[in-house]
Length: 314
Image (cartoon, rainbow, N blue to C red; front, side):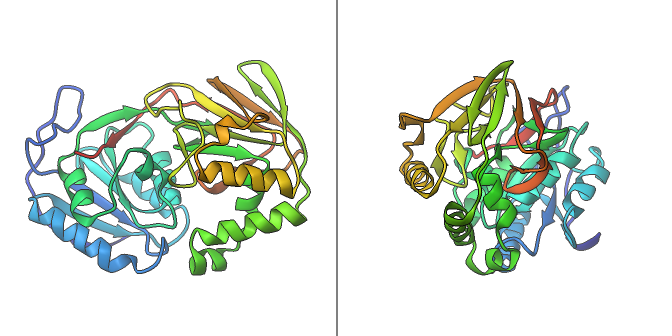
């Protein structure tokens, strides 16, 4: 780890449970900056870090150097040194840090810089420098539930079927060049050239046949799009979106409905709530979580018994 910057600050008063008391003093923030997340990210990150220092917060910055590095940083950081660890990147950076924070009382903060940051959209974090800095420095901290896929944590969603095939096939070079449009391109290719296979989603012991299953921990999928209107990070259960249709026609229909916030209203789409989900199908097919491939079928998905403490907007 190479520290880019560090500014001394006062310690933050804590409650008996070890949580940071919002508004009672400057926070000690470890910002984990992913330079590969999104484009033109460094100047904005520097402005946000400067705004935090102006609030009196101490800011220590560590830059990631490879995939998995953010998780290592979070795993090695001490709860006695920092109050908040801020994920300065996209969904992948957030996911890594959440996995590294197991057993720690440090709160997770967000500096959305990546291709997508669905968690930031979910909690209503406005993407202005001032709001991001204000939230990190003064926002309230609440516990949220997260899920696990074959033991690995995820925050917003996990999926098998069409969406996992898209994530698995998207070009990293194209993603860096086009951003979210890279997924649109790959989705079109997958719709016409892919070979979808049916799978079974076993939700709290009840089997549902489908072609694609998206296990939603919150309402949003892929950014601002509402996939599961009744899902909540505060609830210890998932809302599973089951899409049985295959082929380019159904794929286009689901995609348009998702962008319009109406996928849950389609006659052939089912939303089923549950705490434990097992997805079975062609062994070895990919499973995505928070926008990255994290496992392969069969997949066991469950609510993690340990919540994550998250900084919410003021």
